[in-house]
Amino acid sequence: MSDGQGELILYRTKDGRTDVHLRAAGGTVWLTQAEMAALFETTPQNITQHIRAVYEEGELTEAATCKEDLQVRQEGGREVRRTVKVYRLDLILAVGFRVRSPRGAQFRRWAGGTLAEYLVKGFVLNDARLKDAERADYFDELLRRIRDIRSSEKRFYQKLRDLFKASSSDYDGTAQTAKTFFATIQNKLVYAVTGRTATELIVARADAAANHMGLTNWVGDRPRKADAVVSKNYLDAQELDQLNRLVTMFLDFAEDRAARRIETRMADWIAQTDRFLTFNERNVLAGPGRISHEQMEAIVGERYAAFDARRRADEALAADQDADDDLKQLQAEAKRLAGKHTDTP
Image (cartoon, rainbow, N blue to C red; front, top):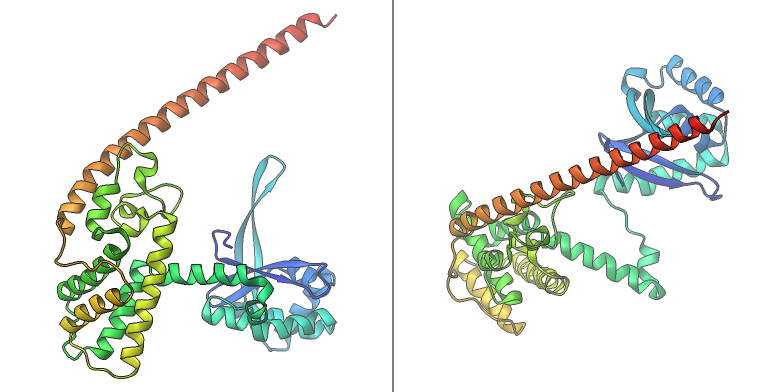
């Protein structure tokens, strides 16, 4: 979870009575004095004394462990902004040691294990939960997410680049050659699932008149042009699941060959891709397809411009309607107040 200033990591005390959100930023986590007081089940005044002792004894320096942070909160119907001091993990642990409470010991153990793993990897796996047969749905959902991340365009290209660089005797990393090579393999995988190349799929499904331009996935609160030229963003749930599983199998296949130091030329990798798809009883693409990347971008650019113009017009109409509704509400309220004033003796 994110608050706009970094990831929020939830820590729940062992007794289950307190939840604390630690802000992760700069490879560490931060808490305010009030949050430390809640975490260690003590008073803010006690936390202040311990912080002062840490600095006075020279164990840590204030410059290295303290910074100011802008916090925005809703209080009643208004937004309140305050600047507060936040303290990094080193200082939190030092205070926790001085508090000498079960809460402090529990947090130090958690920080040395679970939190440390999260800060390094960006995720933590609950091994016991994954091995629990009764939680199969949780494991299946995790697998789906991993596959989806693995088949993302950037992640897919990076993984292939690393694998082919290690196992292709004639690997050429120059921009255009590598781009064409990876696009060829991506096209074959997309074609295996949809019967179209990536560019053909985009042109077939990008619709200026459709909701969200026909996209099923995008970044942010609304589709942007960059989203509209990514083939994966047009796949339905079943197609996306198939592609994710196919990419995962293909990357495992390629990684196994690389690990066994099987020397493979780049042209051979194209043939190996066809062989892999044939083994999996999938359609195999022959040739580059009917629509080039440049043609697709030109077509989608025109459609997105039409889609965006229609969306802006719809938003303007909605804004006008909201303004009319607000005006009517104000007029009705003014009339009600005027009538009440007239009735007053």
